[in-house]
Amino acid sequence: MYVVCKEHLELAIDMFVDEYEDAPDVVDLKDTEFSDWDPPAKCAECEKNAEYLVV
Image: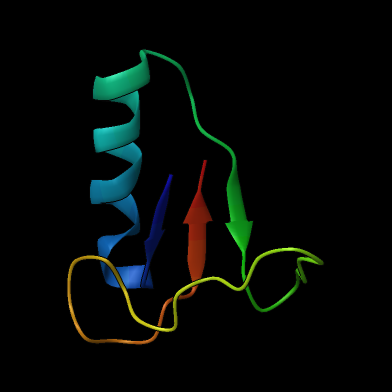
C-alpha cells in the first residue's frame, strides 16, 4: 500500500506491480473517507500532500 501525491502516482503503481505482480486499485483520497483509518497527510516519496492510495 502506498500513499502518494500525483507526481509519484506512476512510481507507486510500478512499485506495487513489481512487488505483487498484479494491478493495483488507485483510490482518490479526496473522494474517499475511511471509518477506521486516517491516511498519512504527506506523500511517501516527498513532502507534498498525499492525494492517492495505491493498494
